Length: 112
Image (cartoon, rainbow, N blue to C red; front, side, top):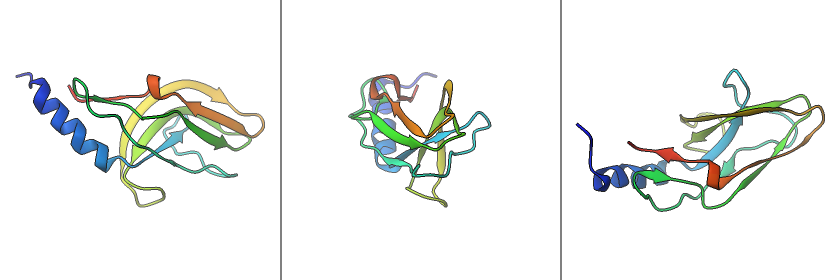
């Protein structure tokens, strides 16, 4: 049975307070580390049709030698926080340190 939009928005709204940070992962799903990399605090849009998105683009510092291949939503800023999953991205290798911008308009969590 498919749930109605009101229910899906309720679940999405609850998720907004649980998913406090976003981090980047490599092709194996392991979070990037090193250099000045850190998870970013995220504020989510109000749910619309069961979908939430970050309110703004997130810019991450990526260390030399890292590959960005996905993002994950976490319940906190560091180890011990729950990884609630995310999505794959087009892989980008960093031969030298740089920045990666996760676009809010292309990043969403859908409750369907």
